[in-house]
Length: 302
Figure 1 (cartoon, rainbow, N blue to C red):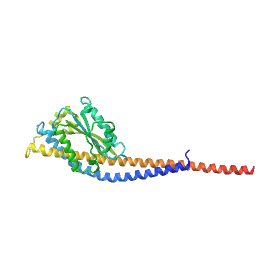
Figure 2 (cartoon, rainbow, N blue to C red; figure 1 turned 45 degrees about the vertical axis):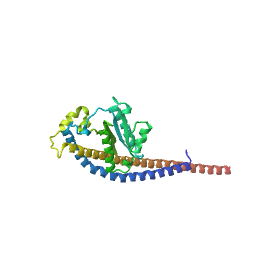
Figure 3 (cartoon, rainbow, N blue to C red; figure 1 turned 90 degrees about the horizontal axis):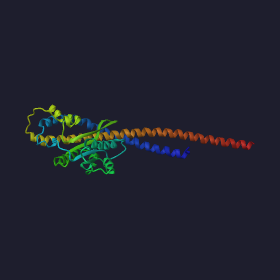
């Protein structure tokens, strides 16, 4: 059994750790409230915009002007992985990176070589994980999750649109954590470009034509179809990426708050166990001292 000094040192160390995890939990909870409000306030807007644009894109159909809905053969694919810059948030980053690799194998592994699939990371943790595995990557972006604004999100989304328009990539997917609640985050793989109706996302390419037909409506475009495609569709893509970014950031704070809450509870349990162990060791030491005194007294009497 460890001596009393070692147990006291461990108790002090765990107590110090508990103070840190408790403070991090409170900070994450405060930041989560703000991020959660941003998500819940933005979701109704982006959902309505997305619903309108689904009908518009379906109505346009295979119009050659609609470059963002062009379905191409996959020769070059980009997978955007959204993680955090900091750790201590449980499996938040690990799950996203793992799902990104599974997506690459599941969706493209049959007909694309690893060199044809590149990754783009948002967040330092995702970049570190992919770099250790020597994965082909574009330059990472760590600033956008540190100080998220619509302007930065729009700039990054525009970069993705330019890469798709220039045919540098034929398909762009995004893997991120969708915010469900403070304790639950769901890893989502979403095809960012080319644009597809939501039903096509869920049902696959083989049902794409049926989904587009169900969404088709007879629209009168004002001022013109070309203007809609050039102005409204890119704007909807930027808003969509901003919504994804807000989801990921809120999920990060929720995961960190949950992780730090569990760490604090574990520290409390460990302190209780160490305190019990300390009391037992202290009682054993006192008992030994008493026995030694009694034994010495008996020896003097004899």
